Image (cartoon, rainbow, N blue to C red; front, side, top):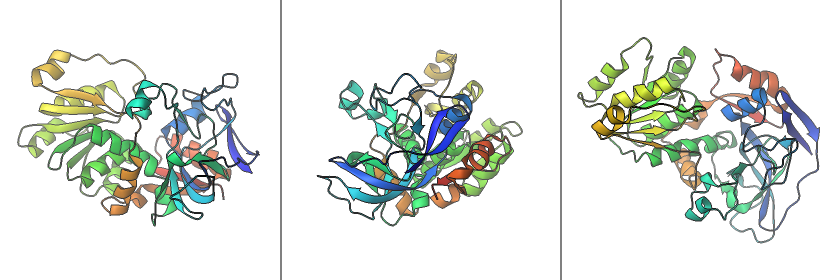
Length: 354
């Protein structure tokens, strides 16, 4: 079968590789669409990062070294069922939760397998991926999506990330939330908040991303914090109290401090972005004296069924997030390089093997 193999920075190759074989308890799937995300972009331009193996050191759960099949945000159609698989049928539309976990570490035993000590991901750490003609996945990670279109289903994975962050924040209907950063994950967070009856203010310095936010979320307030007084806007929308919640989806120290300053007494900031470097906080002034709290969320654990139900409910429009569909043969020029352009107007690019 054909698959897009990742060898290292700027080196991906469409190659013929052996077709994966069914095992008891597994499902064989023909991938339909695979979404490109920020981590794919980082891998292509900057090279391997955990939980990806290297050319000489295998991932502890898959035993694979580079090259590996790319693609972790994907939907597909069931082709075959392994012995013992129930609840699925050939032809079912499904989405894959691309998790590789050991099942034995403290995090896994608590059910928070997103913090597994040996965490890996399909399409990153080996085990196959969405940018292939076939993939074999343990039934545990295969979720039927019913009548949800397969292109929209490919967005369930990033939607689950956003849903986990919002649930972790203990957000409630009627609250006001500021989302700092209007990249794809930030906009998914904003969409989940709005679907739960929360007033959403999106802060973003990029004009292109502000335009995308305004297009996707008609009910949101979208602000340029470099040209507008964000603090005054928040006060005016909250009767002077400040925001109940703030979500850092930008990963910049300045944004963290700004969001903390927008919170009401007793408010909560939820960190969703990955920060590459430490940040210095004035704990007393920014948190303690205002009785505020700060939390963080990574990935997801057991959120896929709820994300699918949310997508099926009509409370958010996943189709609005899809800006391009391309063939795997065009993934470098029309995928990675386009997303790397500072003025691109893409939100989610979906890649098909056909």
